[in-house]
Length: 419
Image: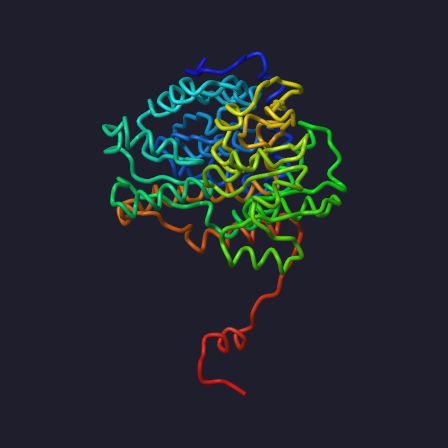
């Protein structure tokens, strides 16, 4: 048995079937895995991953291992681990996994350190906790690291801040910024899985509700789109005037959170910022308001203030905590304010993670071949990787597109020809 810290190895048989089910919707990853198995482009490289431990992540880890890499995995969120998947990776794929759903904060960071024990050449992050740990307390390992990848918006923001302050010690590729990631994973994946998490946790009817989405980035757009499609009256709160204008043009009501808090039934945060829903909002909410978060960290809802201003708190359903305020109104917090789509549901559908994790796999390969040319900064995914993934996905879906003629290419590249 490989080194690990998981909930129960006996869950492995269930996990392996679920991993197989996810793989059926991940044809691009299958193509990459087949090539990796033949070429072994990652032989001699070790990869530490701090990602949501899901069926899709399992397929990514197995692809990296097929490419010759030594891999180790920990969770990027205390509530996002699927324990049967972790068990399957340990038992059948012989991959070290350090992740237990519901782990406390101390265990979470112990697991990050466990994943770093293989002395990685490449880091793979979702939220930048792995990179942050390396820079704060494991600096002796940095000399071995050639580069890393980052999966999500929140992590990219943190890493760009590090690069701007000249404290980032190795290059990072921002997988989140690939078109084949954020246009599909962030929008369609987050949109569907967030609604799924809310419904699994509450079994409440979306139709007819006042559904408040804080943040109109790609994740917020996807959530708003799906809530509207299910019959909700959707209100957007934003601080960015361009996004607020876009939401208005998309047909949504836009107002400050103070106004929305008085009329909302269901609230979802997707901003990446802190205390978006604050004490003042709680005081004006209706009895029975439901709060949840789809941002990476559990900081978007001011949970500390909610606890302090409540006279009673109880777990009323799985992933649903009831807070009774001193004015006797009840507020329901889902999934401890953590990622609701992974806390109460299964995360993004495999079909979109197919593209996101194809970016991860190909970017690790890119780092292994080009690390000597890379500086200590945050890079975009190379355009040819992005386009290759889109082409492979279209081919797998049986969709054909046009090919430019020589005349058309010449026209697009010229400046002489006009009317």
